[in-house]
Image (tube, rainbow, N blue to C red; front, side):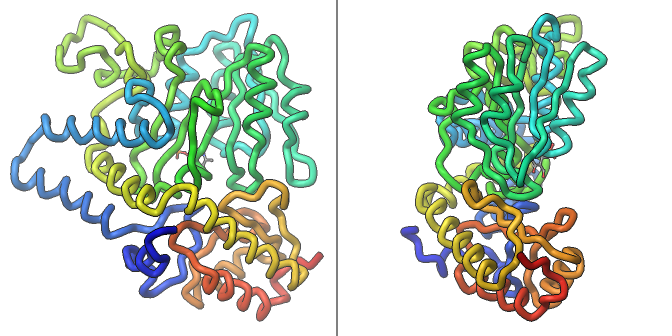
Length: 379
Ligand SMILES: Cc1ncc(COP(=O)(O)O)c(C=O)c1O
């Protein structure tokens, strides 16, 4: 990365006291994002209700995110959570001849739950089982047919860090006329992304993990030529063509992806998005990806030397590496007692890397793993 790692790390005060390796849960707070929150508070203090300025900031956040993913601002909805964006799309779909929703069991629970809730509207949900920590593109190819309406797929699995083969899944889905919704939450911010090159129909992500922002805001990209054909029934005044018409008697969804929004935008949060993206862009997304790969490789090599069972399939590693523990909670506590912040899901110890982590961080984790062989599952 062109700014030195020490200079990047110095912008994240948590590293004064802790080794932070839990971006898969919540990204670290930078001084720039903190300052952006203060900017919102200052505008509120000083001007009381500067709505014009706040709406401008909301559009700035949309434009900054759109640029980052290779889309136009009118293809992006600013929503309160990934769940809100997914629900909005689900509410706009009709489950007729095409009624199947095909997804892997690696999806974040919200994805399963939202589409299962659509069963009362005619959806049929088919889950694909993982084998040896993977759900291969061929599994999707076998399940997707001419009755498949949509294929939601996570880019990286929150549970074991497996990276899905998005290009192949998109190809199989489109060959059979099905839509693809990519959930980028566990990856977004760790590498370049271009929704057009990937040929996605929908892309949804929150910003609180590798996009280094607080919760309360997420984004939904909708392919331009789909927008007019979809009318969400989960809606609100900010989804209307002109929210400021204040016309209670008309439902007039925006011609842009704003039709997938609902109520008042999350104003403090919109201030954060351009600040965080500027920081990441300053480092360079390709450089961030290369840096993360160096760190994940170092952890994997170190874990192998210690003969620790690695749950993340090695042919598809993202920013998250998961190691199998006999008692993952106890290991998280041990790490915490040594000022290392990690997390667990079931028996997996989750260690996740971002632009601010170093090989010394990896070394600190490996040292503790070595000191606690009784908590670890060996090969
Ligand atoms: C892959 C993935 N999708 C979705 C979510 C949840 O999204 P939200 O809480 O914004 O609805 C998470 C949260 O951890 C996640 O990891």
